[in-house]
Length: 246
Image (cartoon, rainbow, N blue to C red):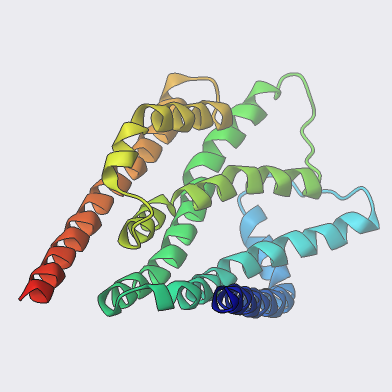
């Protein structure tokens, strides 16, 4: 019993260590993000036909924190993933350790890819529709706070959803998930993804289809990759059992 309690204490201590390292990295990248805030801001608003306005001094500080915060999140992802890998590493076989370590750069690139998809594909669709909807009724003027909230809402969900294939592979490799489970919940997953697509796009079929199709494709890719990892895992387990029996 004491050994089990010590094991739990050690695991909690290790988890705290990994969380602290991740938090320190986030704060460090947040500080770096403040130095690039003006450049990032200029890139985001370069295609706007109007100049954004602020309603008070606190809005300026809010924009700095939002831009630096997103920058810090993106840069912290590889470090957070590596700390997670170090935490679960003792429970993995040597071959699983090498395999799961390869997921870390993929997590980063897929997150960035999701951001780019949301920014370059979804955002122009929705913004053009909404501006056109009120062009004859209102004088268009965006505040910086509202516009950046809109940009975040159009990009961050896709950044998270694009991580699904790697998450599915990782969970399959450590035995928590399998492709059969993903196939069983396919219809529910499709429904949720289609609802997401309809909610964040203009109310026309082309826009809905343009967003829903990539999301459904991501889910199918997740199932296919999970199958590959699952088959390799089963094959490895059978080989180890045969060696043990001999």
